[in-house]
Length: 248
Image (cartoon, rainbow, N blue to C red):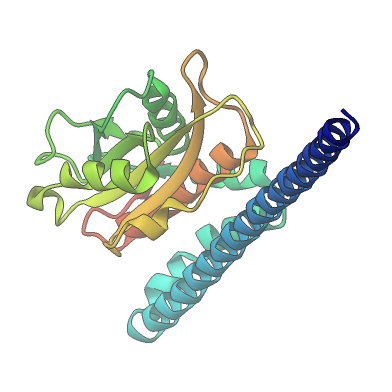
């Protein structure tokens, strides 16, 4: 009996040690998950900053080239550039007032929905129309100069964006194309990856927005910055087209 009792006690001791080790392993796994998540967020932020830097470098190079080829045109655009500078300094209201002076009379926009947007695309388009006067909605891609593709993420970003890109056929080759990637969330400060990394075409502007099925586009800084970026890009693109925007 004594020997059996000793074996039982030894068995219980081993089980206790195993449970303790298992708890330590689970704690280490949890710490590893937290560190991995933090590393991923840090990497995404770094990539986003690199993309922003590359965009600014490209914009500077393009402006330098225009200055050499069309010095008068750059001079005419000086007020718009001034407004953009004011926006960067934090005066968003004055920047938007500057945008509202532009008229896109004769320029049409055609939306393409790559999934269920829960009407969030309407809020996006309404904001564009408020900031660019006389912007019209086209009935077909062919009669429109601007194509807005709205891509809600429902599975994986890369897969959903690839499917949305297939909707942009050869008929949009001469169009201004904007890909609006919609991330479903109710968190206004949610961090999302830069979807432009999933787009190979350099002639497409890609922006990320946050929306929720019950409220549409969220009122947040990310969405404001995305819309401002689209407005500025469209104005720059249209200025380089035959149908130059006229001040109202």
